[in-house]
Amino acid sequence: MWRYLPVLLLLCLWQILCSLGTVPNYVLPSPIEIVQGLGTLLTTGMPPGHLLYNHILYSLYRVGWGFSIACVLGIPLGLLMGWFPWFHRVFSPIIEVIRPIPPLAWIPIAIVWLGIGMRSAAFIIFLGAFFPILLNTASGVLSVSPILIDAARTLNATQKDIFFKVLVPASLPSIFVGMRVGMGVAWMTLVAAEFSGVKDGYGLGFMIMTARDIQRPDQILAGMLVIGMIGFIIDWLFKAWESKTRRCV
Image 1 (tube, rainbow, N blue to C red):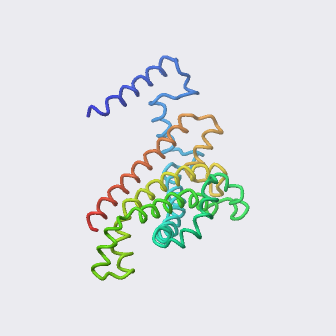
Image 2: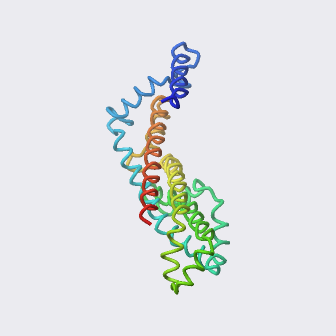
């Protein structure tokens, strides 16, 4: 209970400063105004008629597609890069050239290639999540103790058995770290991708951009709060999944 006291004190101080007019509400709305803005998003929507839960579902859908593709490609490639030196030598230079390019820099070419909408947003999210997943997976394989591999070989384990029964389970902690980092980057790139435009008019990024256009900082901060809460819940689910998986392995 005591660990929440600093947060409560900060919220009280924030509310007092706003109520006294020390901080103008058009610069920083008070916590109460942000809650009221959240209520408006839930009941009226932004733009009107586009309710908050619809924005959340559309954003989750886009993140789900981009993140899933990143996992489907990033985890197997990372395992192969960590296990086969020649695979690492071939793909590492390509990855090191592409990896430093910010996902947001891909937005213009993504729109040219895929148009404005779901496909370009999923592509940007994929790029953001792919490299953390890939590199953490490869790092996990490379960090597996040679003693485990030698012990498996002394028991006449085949290369296939070593790969699937030793390397993959031992790499799971790094894989989950990569997935958690990738999910965080996916949400950051999602909001930016939705800033660039969505045809259907839904998405948390689009909602925040619309609130900005009509000068509603309370709804902007409410949208940011929703994104933070969703990220917190997803990260908690990943931690629970990781813990359960490691117990089963």
